[in-house]
Amino acid sequence: MLFIASLLAAIVPMITYLLIIWQIDRYDKEPFSLVFINYLYGAVGAIFLAVIGSGLISSLVSLFIYDEQMVAHIETIIIAPVVEESTKGFFLFIMVANKKFDNMTDGIVYGGAIGLGFGMTENFFYFVFYSHSFNDWLSIVIIRTLFSGVMHCVSTGTLGAFLGYAKFKPRNIKITFPIIGLLVAMFIHFLWNLSVSFESTAILGFMFMIFTIAIFITVFSVSLLGEKKIIYKELMPESEAGLIPHEHLFILNSSQRNKPGWIDESVRKLYIRAATSLAFRKMQSRNSSGLSKNYYEQDIEHYRNFIRNLLSNTQLS
Image 1 (cartoon, rainbow, N blue to C red):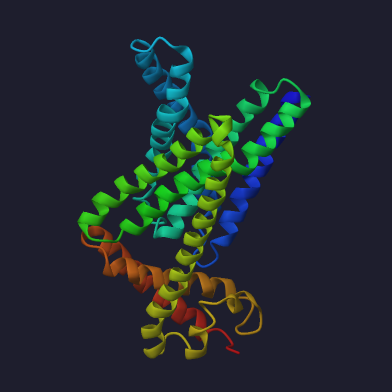
Image 2: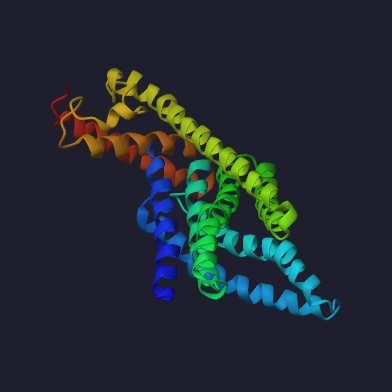
């Protein structure tokens, strides 16, 4: 019974958080299959690598420090943030090369997915192995569901935001921002683990996480607003050139685009996806070079032709 209850308590909240994050990414939504792959990596791959890495470093530390309680604190406060954020971030550094990884919002979504997957597996082990009574179990479930699991989402999502921001920026930013992002992720993890490791500072840890989550949500919102502006800015020349009707320019970057009536309903979703992709490809092309630039330029022409053909055969409202 405990096993099943712990499994459900670990999976359901983290999957719910994952779906919320994915749904909030409303302008250029990532393929859920790719988001879920990141979630699974966090749940399995990052956990596996973290266990190995933490075990090796802890064994090394125990050769020099014989106080078991001191070693345990070092494992929790120092080793865990460094190793776990590195193993979670490893997949993000691979993901950033993916053509679907466009900007800060994508980094937050993919990084958040990895963190939630990691949090799910870690929560499950805590629920099973650290619960000595029903009250213990319930307390651990509440704290880890609302704070510890979310901390993994926030920390790795923060790294993703730095990676996404840097992807189409000059070389110096591409090099420095990922390093800064990883250090910030480790710092968030470090402060949380440090504060909740001692009863006297636990309340500060909860206050810190509430503050950090608020900042994370704010950054997410600002990033979404940036996507809205990109769509308008990049589609304006297309409107001036006659490809996109002028009245659609204000609809395509607003929530109104999800309402029926402004274009034939049979093509509305196709049109939204194509116009949004065209806007982002133009931004990406302008900030790329070499083979990547050629890829984006070909995609731009593809989407222009697609939209032209779509609208020529569609009754506009």
